[in-house]
Length: 200
Image: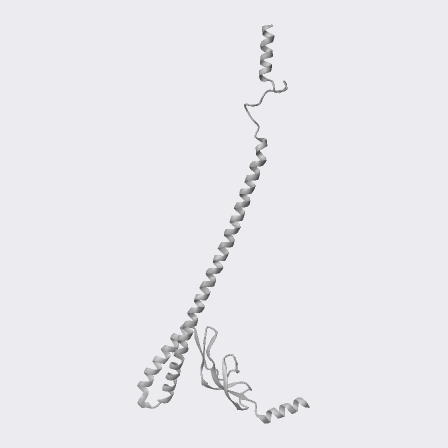
């Protein structure tokens, strides 16, 4: 009887609430907590991706801003330099007039000094991006030239620059001063003959 009582005590101690399976208090199952952990991980990953995309956008915005500031700074510098160069153009004209005025032998040394200074000034301006336009023999371009006069001639095609009164200057694509020129025109008699041929 004592043996049977001990067995019943043992059975009750290790049996579950319904008397079937043993109690599992010592090792609780982790399965119910798994979905909650997965949701937290997914939220953290989503937040991280949002932050990463925001950072990429901020970097792109900053890069665009930096490029715009550099471009504006460069344009401001060119505009300031263009104003200085525009002020030097009359000085170049003065050199050219002085060199054209004194061609006598007595002024040979004087001319050489002037020519040297004039050449140095032109070379330094060219290094800064200034182009001098002396378009004799080239077609008239209203963007670069200003027609001051026209001459009827058969020696040059119509619209050809035959004489330059004043050279033009361009700085990085911006016209500082158009070249003042004389342009070839077809003689009136030739125009009438050409019109007659077109009518016939």
